[in-house]
Image 1 (cartoon, rainbow, N blue to C red):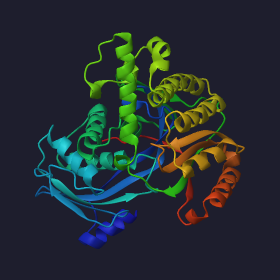
Image 2: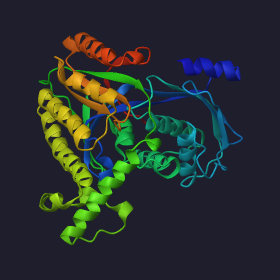
Image 3: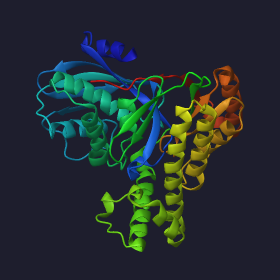
Length: 390
């Protein structure tokens, strides 16, 4: 790994260990985890590696192959506020872990992401791989839900991203050859095995060549629009609605949504339309996977992508172009934006016999529309993978 070579270059010794967390995709269930909905997802066989060694003095010293700035802090003296750089995710993780467990040891490490940033939840993956290292040197044993909760809290409380637990859950709970079907309201989940009768598939990632930051995008605004719709629907129905930041559309009965949706402001109505539509698509998608019907599952993924564009109103011109190209390309069962959908990438489930032709057709169409991105656009073929284990 390049991170191990860089570690040797910096510290003139071998790293003691290497931590890894996979990236994830979510073919159906986008933008509903922060509304406590159900999701489906898969971890993939690419992700974040950290080559590291312990530091007994409690200092955390990190560099990344993707960013220039080196970062350093002490486990007992994390800056109170974010520093507005790539390491904020890891400062937040250190702080959240220290609120629950005593920390004495730090690490020196080099971080390597195996795919371009944007859409595969590299932020959650780097937090989880870092927590793996920091827990190891401090002899802390987290269960899956603790790990997911701490990683989510780092993004929510320190970085300021109002994300749900989709990303962290997929990267921890997933298992190779299975679809994760998770209820984010109560953390119950099922790992649905790939049926022997299911047609084969590969996961293809189409990187737009445009990167993004969730904290600086419209991600948080969309979350608040969903909360506003939930607040209004509850008020119309005479349901006690409590605190604004604790409300969600999952708490709104379907019949209340259907009765009062036309009274919502148009923007809030479209957000609710996406979320309630996605609730239904996830249920249908899990059933399709269970019976081995990847074509039906893929169709629902395309429908999810359409709703994200038209109802949730995410998608840069670049990602919309990739989505539209995928939707009319032979051999692609289904796909959509991967992640928030403001920049980043698209994912597709593709029949193995069509992988080369699908990549060629989508790439030619995309680069014809965006020739300036020829040096940045790229593709990657992946497989499903196990989630991280501490």
